[in-house]
Length: 512
Image 1 (tube, rainbow, N blue to C red):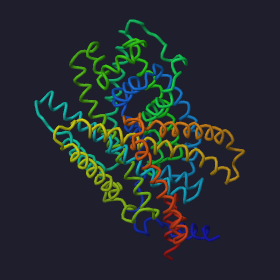
Image 2 (cartoon, helix red, strand yellow):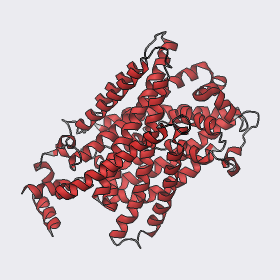
Image 3 (cartoon, one colour):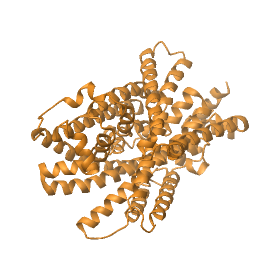
Image 4 (tube, rainbow, N blue to C red):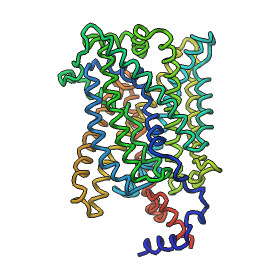
């Protein structure tokens, strides 16, 4: 009864949002259409970084020839996940997508835990890319400009550039991301065509799609490597409040993104096996490492194309940095609006309508981490690549584990949400697909924790295999504790968790 009267009072005022702290506590609607939203989420997948970095690493480290088939399998799992996740997006429009969905299904306390996991995971993903970005830019400057620049200098300049762009309108960001993404995709497609038209000794072999290629102990770990390539598609609901028709655009973009990514990566990883021959792909990847793609393009497409590819490899990483930055800023905004972070985070800035305080937080975190790794790099007789590779692999795998856990929890929250609403019968298909996806994602999360030493290149029994994934566990526990404290001491704030714009109405009711 109280909730109903609060809602009515807010509606009657004709401007509950604008009269309580002004529009600065709402993200600007109608900024993104299908194209802008799709480009914003796909940029986070960094297609060129995956083809040039993740795929060769998976071939080399795990010795799994059937990587293309893994992308197909994961595509199916994530489509099953998306069926329930997309339906949830029709009912809940909140920039804190994962934790909002989990709050609505599993309760505010679980949502508080998910919120902190999301904040830590996406920060880790974003900051980790600065390591490889700085390393690659430093290499380009040494090769083409004969300049010896430490990796952390371009990394810090990128931190500032991303932070500045984060304050702009999201549609401006979408245009920047879109241009960079489209160029990346075109270059990879050109390579795919070149590989197919000039195959290795075994010709156009489909051996990489043979299920027998997935036998062996390394399959579970290979799944962990490959699922990281999909991260980004799940971000579509984060921008729901900034679209004109979120109930239509968000599900559409999610299915386009996950389907497109699965097909694109399956074909591109197959093209790598065709270019070398399936029987040589593992050995060649071990020999060339992250230079595999450039080695193959140089012989087929020439030096100029390969040089351009190196440059676009860097710009693609910049696009991913900006995309993850935008997501972190919006999670911080949602958490500030709902009382999980200080209220300053729950306000937008100036005419751009961007979550400025959240953007500043993400920029500060990035700067501190990069500076910390730069200090670690300043050691006599040390390996100059070690801090860079640690920053990239540690951050990337911590973030990937966090997002996998969030996806699993979100799958089960979909089941709980519709069951609690008495809609289990009408949503039977979505409940089944969400359950299957949730179980599959938990299995992948288990493999990720089990094989974390392999994923980060640590030795067997290394403390890192416990400490690094423990960061996600610690974030979850800290968030749950915060939720329990709020439920006990500030139930009105606890009630706002996951409510999004509806929290304005609760605030209005509490202040009247």
